[in-house]
Amino acid sequence: MIDVSDVYKSFGQNHVLKGVNLKVHDGKSMVIIGASGQGKSVILKCLLGLTKPNSGKILLNGIDPNSPQKNIILAKVGMLFQGGALFDSLPVWQNVAFRYLHGKQKINAREARKIAIEKLERVGLKKSFADNFPSQLSGGMQKRVALARAIATQPEIIFFDEPTTGLDPIMAQVINSLIRELVMELGVTAVTITHDIQSVRSIADEVAFLHNGIIQWTGALNQLDKSNNKYLKQFIAGSTDGPIGTLR
Image 1: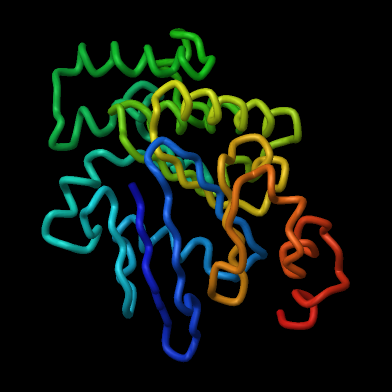
Image 2: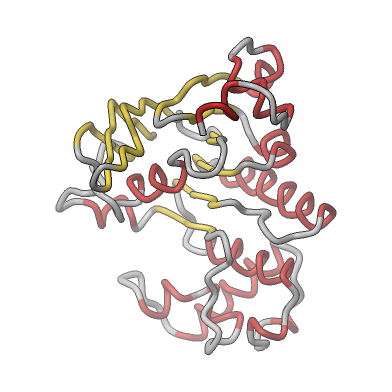
């Protein structure tokens, strides 16, 4: 479903991605981990076509997200942003149904509201919250609304950008569990970027470790703790001693 081949990306003299290779199979949940400033967000922006690589190739279900055909695949993509990115001026149900109300998949408001409420209930929010505004919700509830929006149009691919940032440990695990349930239920391909090891263990089928602009290690979740990669071992342990500390 996702094929990243030898991707390089620089911003001036700042060489962020230095030959990234990654494959994500249909229906699998891939989690990309790594320390801050190693290029995780840049990979995500490249996958979404928001940033164009200097060289290399990216294909989402066979389509380049920077090509004239990008709207074909982006219409089948859902996104959960790090901060939720809800529209403060819109009630919850309009946030969830935003693409139906304003995008090319436009439908009438009554049907859009019905779908929005169905998705809200799927992520554990009652119908009564549909007419609230984001500012009236807790951080965890806002994250659920954002998750409902990400699945609203039945996407084939969902991207998750640091999905548990800013949440307490209990709510973070609630969101992790919801993500795992939804990925399996919908059969979507998922890519998550995070530095939260608990999220990795909760939602990943496969893991890719990014350091110094390249994927240093990739493998199944059950192989994560068996790796001898010195960078990965230090990252998982959260140790200040090791090669990452000397290179950063």
